[in-house]
Length: 441
Image 1 (cartoon, rainbow, N blue to C red):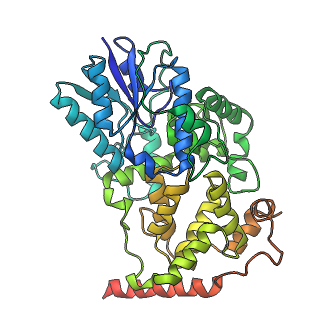
Image 2 (cartoon, rainbow, N blue to C red):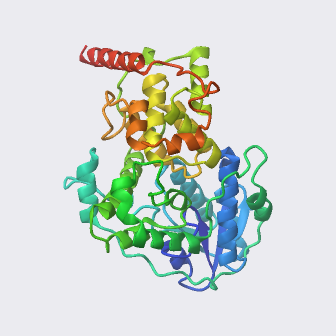
Image 3 (cartoon, rainbow, N blue to C red):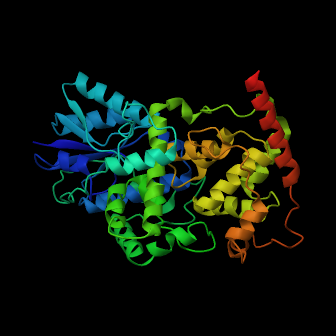
């Protein structure tokens, strides 16, 4: 009997419970829905998705089908074509993901078929970590302790690469993977083959992980795991990573585990509070604190294009434009600068990151922006305002990162700062005081 594997954020053969469930009764028919929502992505991200799917198709001996259209239509069509009564998929927890699986389940049920959800893209499924009374954790540190105590399964066995039945496609992966899209060609190519990603992680765990805690905030050094893109596309599961770190003693491994706990924490917050994707969970500033009109647009474009006159901010934004990624420390600096120096709402920065990031993860993006803006769960207090100059001195002491991305720094071609940090910091803190006074009535 054939079952269908609906590929979502789990484009891999290793450690994939939903795929194993689909193969339990025989060869599985695999389908990915190339939905209209994909065309809201940057061309670079679409091109990388095509390369990921191309690799998965190769690993399944050409069996993966990629169908254009909404997931409910694509999945139902493949189930009918292959006489499948059951479709297996990983459970999503974002508002859009929940909506898609609801639509697929309804379409299948109306046709006498069933959607079964197994596993999630997280070490612990959102909603599972909770206090003894069943309520949510609102602060990360106790959440992370409970998260560790809850634990997670060991990695699942690899799926059988030969246990697939071919599904036809109507999306030309070869063209999209090779050339990207005209509006945003794939300028910096990241690894997209599952076996190489897993091997690179194993090599890092064996020889580079020991530097992680000490050097993770240094954008001038290549000391991070480079897992953000494969995690975002589901080519490696957090369980696989945690199984390796569990075997390593020391602060570095615990710190990387903590970063995965943050990923689960943010997914948990968005699952419990879907409005957090657009709304601040905590009101911090009066609405009249934000810059508006043409002046706001000019400030935003200077930030977006990396021409603020603050070298670390500009380096980060140019790295993002060129590669679709940005070092995590620098992400915090550029986000703080947008919200607290330029006085623009976090949603505007989050929207730009959504369009630009190759490693985009909805919960991570929205809740990290809320963390910087001081509006989320366990957020940094609003009065924590990053100084771009001191951050550069501390984390890029030899200016290698800045000079790589802003080669004209210290020349007449580089612009003067568009704002005075001290002045804007004072204005942000004054707005915070007004907000607190208003809240007290």
